[in-house]
Length: 266
Image 1 (cartoon, helix red, strand yellow):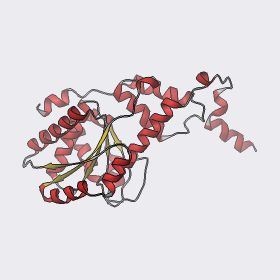
Image 2 (cartoon, rainbow, N blue to C red; image 1 turned 60 degrees about the vertical axis):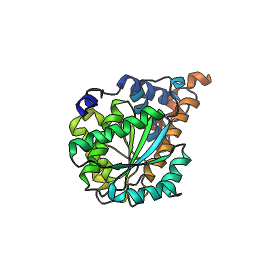
Image 3 (cartoon, rainbow, N blue to C red; image 1 turned 45 degrees about the vertical axis):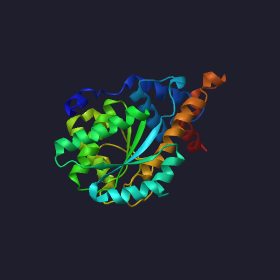
Image 4 (cartoon, rainbow, N blue to C red; image 1 turned 90 degrees about the vertical axis):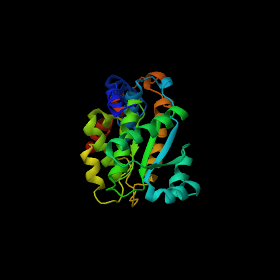
């Protein structure tokens, strides 16, 4: 499939489902907004899937994709085969770590190579969530372009991507230049310690739930962010609303704003 056909399949997420999912969070027996980033992530995930009922939201099957050029292929193989942090952490959240070696020599080929690699993985294994890490130099244009193609393909298949590091953010920016709505499918895994990490996320208007001072964007932060996806979905599915629990106290009493007023009045 050509990249133009892939872009044509990318649609805006369902904002109605996002709003209804957030309404459920607001009605849970807890201070309104107290789960903060978990609520935003899960509500947006509901919008991607087009669901808002708790029984329709499942824990996604996931994979962590570590992109590299031929120059890093040997290193990538060692990481995948050994118990390095990136694959140990991915396994802890029920995923696996997969190395994707980019061989294209032109940007057009790289876009389609990245898209084809992601399409094959998603179709074969039914993944509903992908993490992107990168071993290549942040300036490696072919790897960044291939990742951009992968992000576009994932969005076309309604699969969110967790970005890890500056290179993956630059890839997302490149994808957004071709299809701006693709950023609705992107999540920031963490703020790495790389130079320009915060600025790269700000350019995408993304905020990360984690700041771990990890020195690279190889994928460890994305793997850990998978855990946060699980936590948000668990709260959405398993916590009860006031109505479900038969609690008739005013929800306002549980709001953070109301609690702050009470604190100030003491």
